Amino acid sequence: MIAAGATVAAAPLIRELTPADRTRIDAMVRATGLFQDDEAAVALEVFDGAAASTGPRRDYFGAGAVVDGQLAGWIVWGPTPCTTGTYDLYWLVIDPELHSRGIGTALVHEMERRLAGTARLIVVETAGRPAYAGTRAFYEARGYRRTATIPDFYAPDDDLVVYVKALTTLAR
Image 1 (cartoon, rainbow, N blue to C red):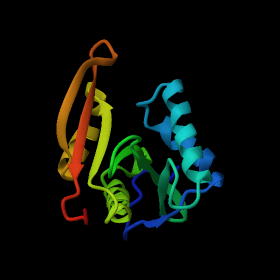
Image 2 (image 1 turned 180 degrees about the horizontal axis):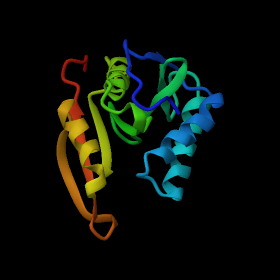
Image 3 (image 1 turned 180 degrees about the vertical axis):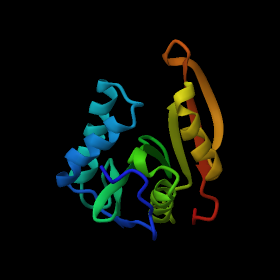
Image 4 (image 1 turned 45 degrees about the vertical axis):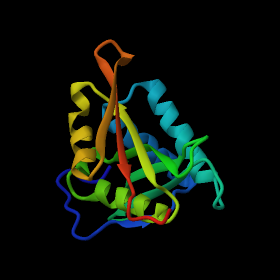
């Protein structure tokens, strides 16, 4: 992990994810303390899909943020099946020691930039339990609007919360 208290002096370097990032991805997912083993396994499956995919027509796209030569965060998104111009943001994980330093924002902006001219809507699904309050606030602060809640979806007292962002400035 990156040293606690490290500061990000400049915007992180954004690059493609590669299969070589897998161990670091796993470490970041587990370090958050938010995900159970089955959820961490899904994160790695989605990462594997993004890191192995090439070309414009694929299920997963991803990017990583590098700080001080080390992967500090990652994001994966993809087209939502059976829709026109709708994309799901599947995973966004930042090294917990580097939260609130702009890395997540940089990755979300990179995804939105890459979707310019292609996407009309981005959908994010997240959990409703208290440990995810910061996650929900993060999306809201970046213009994502809470549009649905399914009570007890993940487990008793753990709702599914859906956020969307319309990319109205993009060509239709």
